Structures are given as C-alpha cells and as structure tokens.
Length: 118
Image 1 (cartoon, rainbow, N blue to C red):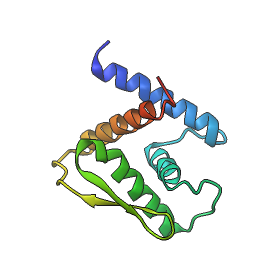
Image 2 (image 1 turned 180 degrees about the horizontal axis):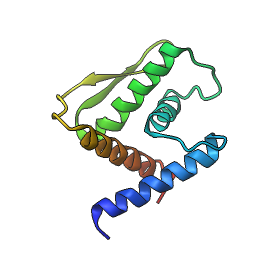
Image 3 (image 1 turned 90 degrees about the horizontal axis):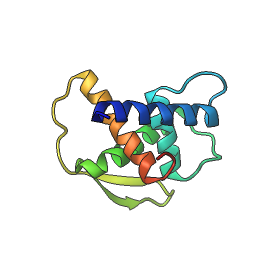
C-alpha cells in the first residue's frame, strides 16, 4: 500500500475512534483532535477550560506533535502543570493542503506512539 493510502487509512481510524469516544454524533475535525491532544498532554482531563486556555491547549498539542520533526523541544512544566516548549527550527513554507497533511501525519504518529491505533 502506498504511503499516502496508509496515512489516509490510519487518519480515518483515528477520526472514527476519537469521534466514537468523544463526540455525540458529529465527526471530529482536525482542530478538535488537536484540542483533545492538548488536553491529553496537559493531563487535566476533567477540567473546564476558558477560551484562552483552549487556544493554549492547541498550541501545546501543535508543539508536541511537531517535536519529533525537530521544530520544537520540550522545556519544562510551569507551576500550574502546563508544558512549555522551546522553538528550535522554523517550519518550512507550506501550502494549506501540505500543512494539513503534515498535521495529520503528526497526529497519526502520535496515536501510533500512544498505541491508540496500530
């Protein structure tokens, strides 16, 4: 199977599993999945978040997802338990579709690492 087909199949598996686990009828989109990863990485799962917190959670997720690619590096946890990352390398200029593919690939790799999917 071609690399793109494997990614598409694994992405669909992630979306289906997370939608079944966290959504009530609506299929989760990329942003919703990034948000869930941010909540997971923060580790404060049963907490209600303010709008600013939600943006920060998505930032945490993006840093964590792009860390294996060398763009960010984990730095420390602050006194409230929020992870902080250091910027390491500028992301290449990507078209919107290429950004989406990179994020989907990073998400699939994240859930493979967590053994959520195979």
